[in-house]
Figure 1 (cartoon, one colour):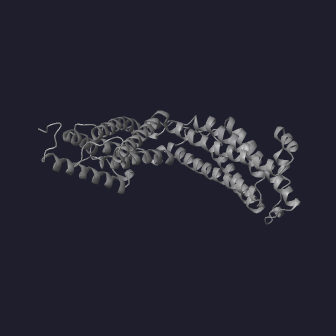
Figure 2: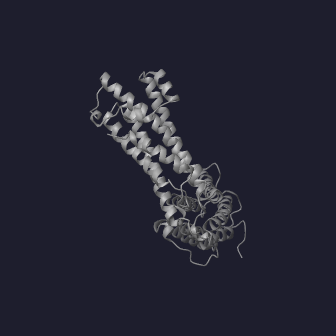
Figure 3: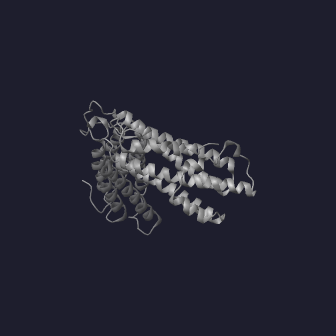
Length: 370
């Protein structure tokens, strides 16, 4: 029996071997890619998020226990051994299994990537934390460099565990709503940046204010023509063309924001429960795998759109008409494809969003000519 408060010669080889085996195990998990590893035993849980939630609760507690053992006397080898064995024999394999169950074809690519990322962060932080176990030193001080590493890595484990628990609470729909809202915020930021740029360039604020109250995009689009895509210059004629494009871009960015907001309300908040195997498919209901594919495609295009809009703002600052036209065309054409993909609801039937998308689709793409 191991005696607390002492470090006998027999304790060290066993603990050292356990530490080395644990580090090798965690290293193998990282190198083989966590999503390709399977649990070595039957866990009796079919719901990936339930399993992940319960597992990270225990992992968080073990991280806390391990950090306390490292930082507080007495040094108890048996306590270290027990904690490390539980991690390698049950908790980490259980976490890996939960990640495996979150298949991209059922949980969406973004959601699966997020839970995999958080699990990987847990494993990386545990690797660093375990390396601080003082085999040949006294208990570490919180103020020492090693002690600060212990606290930092424990914090990372806590944060990642809490993030996985949050994924369980908000679900796939809640996670995708958050991602979409981030894209909305990026578009709004770019719009504000463009507005500031317009003020700096001395555009007619009275004209802009009038158009903000009542604008007709189809009229504005008629001002654009392919022949206007000319190399960058700074002539007064060129400034007029830039201003026309600014007015069109600003108004169409508002439409994109409205469309993304409608996507949250009409599509993501009405999303059928995922994954598919938790539900009975009705006769008129779209296949869950098809729904996941649509979601993956839509969220990917939203990301591209937000990046393009950031580039578009830069092109306005550079007075580069050719790039402005190219980026407007690509950005708003992609926006129209998002509207087309989401035109019908998840039962394949038209609704209020369908009517809005149909009415505004031509407006969204009308100015995207370069």
